[in-house]
Image (tube, rainbow, N blue to C red; front, top):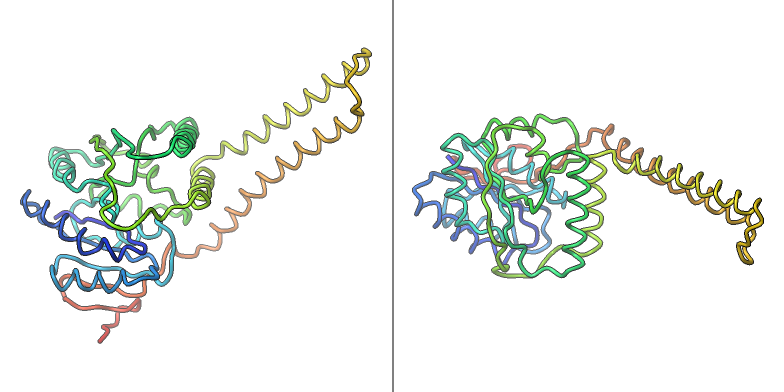
Length: 314
């Protein structure tokens, strides 16, 4: 059986259509399946639509988180709830085309344990967003040696891979990279990013920037090395300026002492800032708080709704 994990945040317009489209594709391909919608603390009627989807098709399940834990938490909640022999993660807005899932499933049947969905086309993205994305994935790839070019959360994982990822102890995760880091036999399928069926893009520039910083720091220590390089550069620059000043080279109206102090002070502050950021991430990890908290679930086998304590709700 294939478990399809669908993280959902304020997707009331998409739930029923997404459930119908994915179910239609899988039924047409004769693939036994379950759909797991994860309501990541939505503020609209997303959960009501998930309940409606379950009434229409008992193979649609639901996991409701107690608040918004972010997409990473929602993905892990869905993976934890999955019962299939393999698991596919897909966006609720159908920008990841469900028609590609049967091809992923076929590759899994032929022995692939990780099937990565990669973008052959990134859709309608502005040039700034595309450039920043390429820079971010370039940094991850250079530090981790994992090919992150045009990757996405759209992928199919064997149950063994799901168990391996869930067993990792860290709380601050980057699913897109972890699926490659754990290893296992991997294959790739390419797809074109589709337009959203309904609704608008949820990600703002601020959210994307925070996402990039969190995941870069959680998956690589490269920024710590940057502080060392920066410190060396500041020292060398200061020495060159001092030598030029001693040789009588005119540096304009700027006071050499002030320039040197500013350079050194700036370098020190930059290094301290990077170090403190990593210390804050360590602080978050050692608290060992869960990645997510489940408020309610809809079980396929029992056709009931439970709260986070496993008790049946009316």
